Length: 265
Image 1: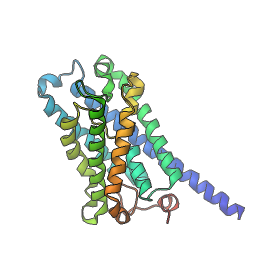
Image 2: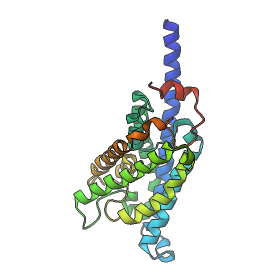
Image 3: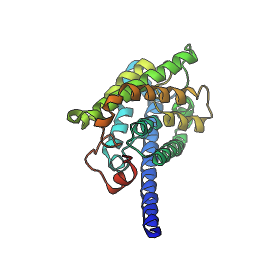
Image 4: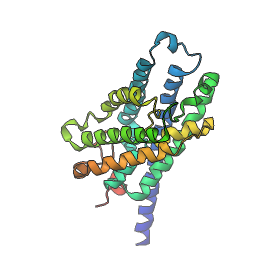
């Protein structure tokens, strides 16, 4: 009996470590790539201000490219291993839908937050251009209240998670789930960026806050996305049974680790 428990514990540790590394790398790559785009598009001294004078157009391009990085991670081996949540709010929804085991959900969130910070460290190499926009930190926009920024984060995260649930919940369209993100953020960023910065992801906001030291209203980017995701999970709860696995792609590639750690029923 003890031998069987030892084997199960060893398997659990093996897969939990594997999932931690996957979410860590995925979130680090998202922030390194995505915020590098933000810095290049809007940092002081960037040629993009002259090449694309329209701020709104640059926001559309930035949102599309940021979403494309997230989609690419979901399609990659990272997505095959851990599901590429790369966002604590997304992991929370999968946990609420009982598609991921509780201790593993904590592992995912720790990996995402750690990966966000480590992934932002190389952004320091952008130097003055990066510092000019605090390395892409999210703060309430000038002229907008804390309440407006909070509601903006709730609304954008609610929209993102609701669409995610809808895509994953229906077999005919779930294979297109990752491809939804570039277009969604291309729409949301120009609409919301001036108000809150369009985070929708506590990890995305944590990384640049750490390296810039800019913590103004940071709680907004924790409470807002979590609240938006919670409301979306309530609104989409009728689809929970249709979601078979805690992934954004690779739905039919269930591994031994998926069976061991994700299934609660």
